[in-house]
Image: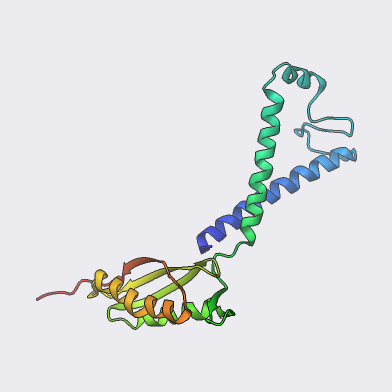
Length: 195
């Protein structure tokens, strides 16, 4: 998960947690007949979320209860999806390598990323490379960010990336394919003065 998304995730999580904590604490305080703010809609243990009059108003509409239950169910499903997404790794920790004898070896994902970064950076015109493995253990994918020197040609950099970095890595890991998504950026530099 990129750093910006992690920060946004943490801020949203902190705000939702704070709202739930304050709301739950106020409801709990009202339930125990503790003092609550004057603007709070429930002030004692006998107060309810929907009064009898409110329930009768909505009971007359046949769409209300199915819509309310569907909205709450959707909210629960979204919360569960978000919770499971927190445990999903953005990077692949290991790759299964077929050894040819019916067994499989495990290759650390970070080791493969380091080799790909070194091979990509060794090309002429590439200032820096950053590689991240994603996908499944048996079918990894790569995301590569190349920082190109001012004199570098993007098509030559991509051709070199495929032939000098990705293809040797694919062959050595015994993978049938190693799909890659490459993003190219140029190094910021000042224009040269001509006199």
